[in-house]
Length: 276
Image 1 (tube, rainbow, N blue to C red):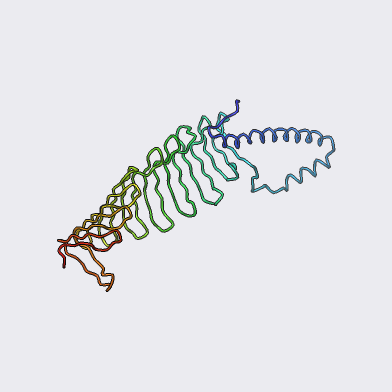
Image 2: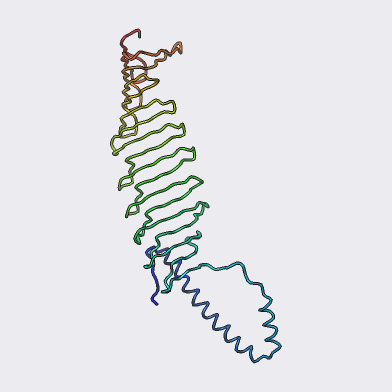
């Protein structure tokens, strides 16, 4: 039977160890057979003692090996347990020695499950729980992550879609404040939508630096449109807005029929109506 090869080089190196151990066990079996023939000439007493030892020996409940394989009826490896780069691994092999399923534990103690399609050298789906945070990643044929579903350590969650270069294009999530949000991005600008826990919706236009430059919000049933500069400072607001007097600290809620302009420090430079 010709030696099997795996598409993943590291798996091939590990599984080839099995062949070496098989040869070692065969040689050991021949040596035991020769000792058995020799023992037949040593007399009944020695034979009786050997028989007694074999009869009273307790069966071992532990199998110790560097690698364990299950073969099909044609002698092909279909399931293998081994160490891959010092990580325990369970591999399910296809008829052509490809590895469509690989279960392992990384050096941090986190489990990882890999699914590969049609013998691809890159995993198609990865399921892991790094530092207790679960994540599912779907890759394309070139190994580039295209879809990721994950949870954060702050109990946030998100679903992200990436282009062929690994750049985020669509993000859907729920942050630690329990605000739901959606972001569409083409790498140069984007659109963001958010819904706060209090039920206040917002729609924004995002620049290439990820800053919201235009915001349409509905706060407590009162709409407003806000324009911001590249630093994220509000420069103009149409509609309901809350102003704070820096000298007294008092807050003033302006009506829907309001327009306010601000300078680059956030101070009011013009408003209409002037006293509303």
